[in-house]
Image 1 (cartoon, rainbow, N blue to C red):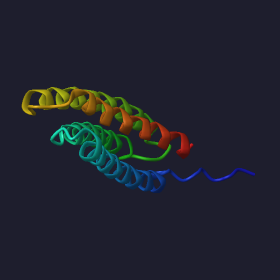
Image 2 (image 1 turned 180 degrees about the horizontal axis):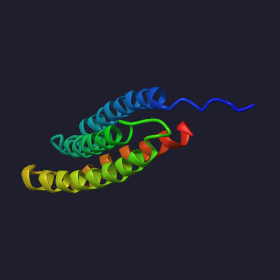
Image 3 (image 1 turned 45 degrees about the horizontal axis):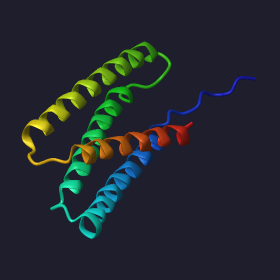
Length: 132
């Protein structure tokens, strides 16, 4: 006897995206507390962390929109194409976003910018491990 196919994980992914928003907010609050209490650097750390984290979050959401637009067995080839397209768009927007931030935002703490970006990327990887 065969079993029905598993449902797609859109509901679980939506729940994890909401958690990512909370992680983003907590990361910005922690950076703000660190900046005010310990470093006292005119909120440069908060600005850098927030910009890096928001850039990472925005590009990940665009990738998610590309990938999870279509579902089902018949759409498998289209899903794979969208996966490649979404990843390419994510990389281009990430590079463009970093370039725009470095050009427009002065003064800027580059280590804080990259730290915010990396922490959000690590939280996505943690989310994917928990999803499987």
